Each structure stands twice: as structure tokens, then as C-alpha cells.
Length: 294
Image (cartoon, rainbow, N blue to C red; front, side, top):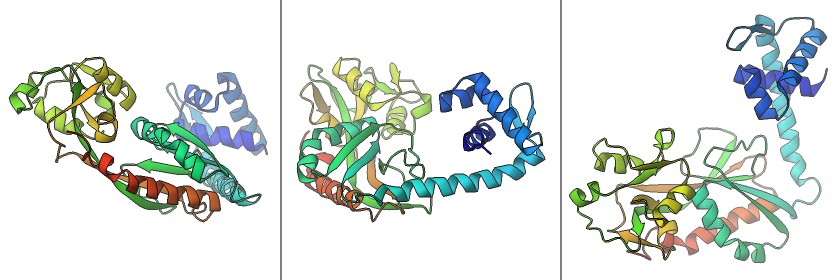
């Protein structure tokens, strides 16, 4: 039995559509259909009912799913453990964080590299949660902690947020004046981002003048004079093109958590990077907490 066929089966069982599987696995639509058919022929049973709008597992497919997921977990575990089988102190450590935090890390990467010369860094800017079980990343920095027994967490610190506008803007920070200003915020799919609930409450249900889907575009829009926005202080206070409007927003803050899979937490290079990140956040505590601007 071909593992690639099983991988296609698992992905289709979760996604339900050939087009979604083709996009996720970067293969053609006919290739997905062909691999599903090959697996069904090898097993001698139909695994999916082909409905007009999606594929649904049959009883035989449901039975195979549990075994295939067990194989996937075993393969993922081998992949994680293999990370330290050659030289646990040397190699690459992949860090995933949202766009603003990745920018913060990139600024300090020179120091991290100097202190950890045996480690190569990969930074992934993504506000979607990378899968640590599949080693899409070795370390995550996030503001929420998933309830997963496979993860080990360390608190890095707390990030403060404030209102920022272009340096040439003159704005009173009374609520009535702020409400009448143009605002830049996240789109409806990202209203869970820090500061968005506060902004929407201020605007009394009105939508911001411009809506974006990541921190870097939000930052650039404010730099371009599109309006005001709630930004993390470590981003806004270090940009000479911006000025802070008023003090830190006490109602808006976000704990920063470092997440690692339990199978990797004792790997020497991962442990050293974790310790270095904890030290970095402690050194930059004043900036993170918004005590260097305003």
C-alpha cells in the first residue's frame, strides 16, 4: 500500500473536496482522483461516496481513517525524534509567529545568531497556527495557548497596545474626537486580533474605513496616512513615521507564549533558542509593555 495514497485519503477525508486537496498537496485534481481510486482498488472497497458538492466517507472509509491517522501520528513522531539523532546542538530551528512579532524577532536576529552560532534560524510570518506535530515549525510564539496535551508552553511576557497615526496627524485622544477619525482595522475574519473589539466598541458598530488581513499591511496603511489603528507598542513606538495617540490601552494587552512540542523540548538547539527568546523578551520588557513611548 502506498503511503502517498493514504496521505491523499487523509487529506480528502478532512477537506471533503478534490480541489482543496489538490491545492493543499500541490498536485493536480486528476492526480488526487487517481490516488483515491488506486487506494480503493488496493483495499477492495469504496472509501468515499461522491456527492455533488463533496466526498463523504463510507463505512469502510471510516474504518480506514482511524488506522491511517495512527500511521500519520507514528510518522510525525519519527520525524520529530529524528531531529536530534544526528547532532542535537547544531541545525535549523524554525520559529512561527504572526507578522508583527516576526518583525520584532527579525530586528534582534543578529544578536540571537551571535549568541547561537551553531543554530540556523527560519522565521515564518503567519497568524495561522503552525502544526508542531508535523514540524511545520519547531517553536511558536502565540497570544493564545491551544488546549493540546502534546504542547509545552513558557510565558515570554506581555505586549501592550496603543493607538497610532501618521506622525503629521494632530489628533485629540478624547473618545468623541477619535470616533470621528478614519480608522484602519482587520477584516471580519480577523476581528479576534488584539485591539479590534476595543476599536469596534469605540466606533459604535461602524466599520473602519480600511480593512486588512495582517499586521504588516495594517502598519503600512497607518504609515501611509490612511487613518488610526491599534498597534502593538513594540511595532508603533519604534517607527519614527508614527506617533502614539494617548497612553497604552489598559483594556488591550496580549500575553506572549512560547510553544514547543513535548518531543522537541529537550533537543539541545531548541532548548537553547527557547532560553535565548525568554532572555530577549526580558531584555525588551520596557518596549513590549509600551513604557518607551507616549
